[in-house]
Length: 381
Image 1 (cartoon, helix red, strand yellow):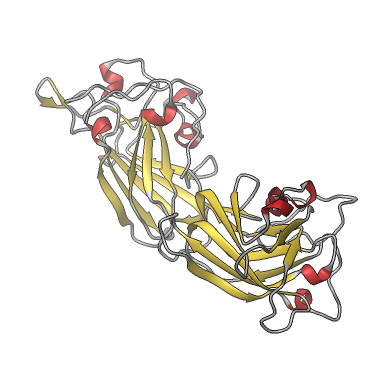
Image 2 (image 1 turned 90 degrees about the horizontal axis):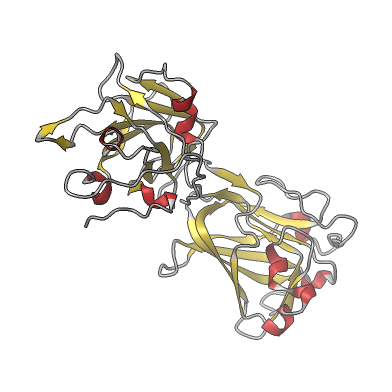
């Protein structure tokens, strides 16, 4: 399959491959373009990796340490909500609307039952996340509608089975029937200011923290018991002013401007228009690695402050102009290794060619289109 990527979309002028890795703090990348054939001869590229590089982060399926972007809640206004077993006619009222569940402020969400018990909140995201807790903020009204017991499940996609992440009671202060948690108010400041590790201490909330190493795309939250309920008593409704699922959000690239880059085999005396910062600045800006004294092929070592798990690699085409010298500067094979710290040995994560269209450009197919300087890169995991 050959073809020229559209010239009006930056993501199309890139190549992505999938791979999988353990958690790693450092990555080492090796590119290759010596496999291109020009006039019947193999040509060694003198300028290598003339592109913007992104390492893709995606759904985790193996245990790993805390990494990527810590967030107060992996759900937000853009998260799709399906409230199974809740009366939608209640939710349509502006003071009880579905959006109030995850809008980052004190605003009551009410679920009045009209189906099976217990009701289920299905939250669908556009990118994976790893949840490490749950928080419910007290409503502005009757404390008997506070949920005090929870269950949270996750799935990797809509065709997968639900897997229980955690279930149980909230913290002891929230569970108390004798000292009922204070009610939240809409004034003076309804905005919730929380982090992954701490809820908003100026607000009233219940919480549970738990260990979870798996990443999921969708979550299903169930509240099985309300305050003052006895045993298996089924409540008629629950009301909370916000739901938070603290944890970590998947990212388009685990490397960025704060990632330390060292290279072996690249001539670093290039001037500002080919600087190291351009490799991972999130926009189209050429990074060049002309061969110098050192290892062949050149190596890029990227050191992070936290552990991460890489599941792919993308390289974005240089800005041109559309001449052979720039086409032949595209790396078409890669090797990526990782290690936990500087005392460990490098471990191979993945290696091989990029996709067919990118790999065969200028050989048996058209060359990939060139990117435009300064274009922001809008990518996802």
